[in-house]
Image (cartoon, rainbow, N blue to C red; front, side):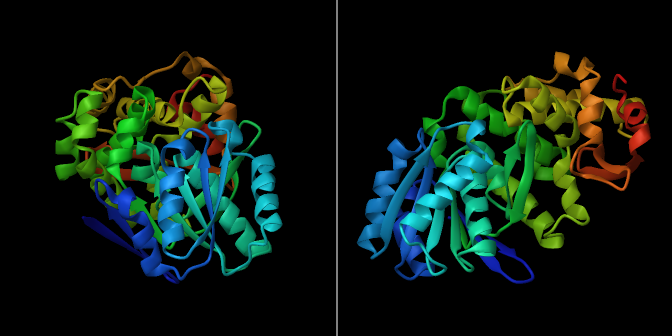
Length: 360
């Protein structure tokens, strides 16, 4: 079993990674939580696969389990769905001594995580959270670090909170149930991280040319990704400095994702955004020659998109300028000087079009 410890100012938790871990999840949870009421939250794709078995395990350890599900998809990452789940927990008399388990992909982790954080701040102060991610995107990125949020209209992750889990359990075996597109999507976040880390992580990326190879090397890919994410989060829990590195590929990616109106998945948009920003900075001489092509090849090898007609829209610039990471008229743009050497450029908002070579 791989164990990664996330040590923060006011909390410490472990990320456990092991094939088959879901079969003993109840036992693992019972080691850190006393018996209590638990809201087990999944979308309606994941719930039929794993919810009943985990609920049975938890019940055997004395937990009172309440299972909830919601329609799968980004549309459920909303304030209305947050309200619906909150009302269900209130109706079931949950209190601050109880807990929430997010069992599913990135939307589940965000929604259930924000639910716990929202209730902890407003009603059930102290309610606990465990993340059990089942998608590649969630396993390599969103389940660790405490950032939880819902969307507002077409603006992603605009309403949210930092709320760290007590434990993260990752079972790579769950990836075998994913449709090919869902699996490959998560690889966009992996290549983004590997380009910044370099070394053995990038060497592993260079071995992967098919979606089947992602499954074959899943344990290593998850471990490298979480180690990187944990190190960044531990150095900057609330995104005041180094944590901004995690936005690599996202500045343009989020804009393209919004313009696609659901046609692009998040990891696909990150793939497009990563290549676009590499190309822009390579054109300016800030990224070493040939790096864009290297990154592009690694993403395209598994079928991820590396460009999009939406990049030609003048709306991309508008969306970037109104990004929540725009502070006092400046936007911090993350790029790589070369593989393994990330950097941040603080750019005035009125120069973003020129820096990123976007249509005005």
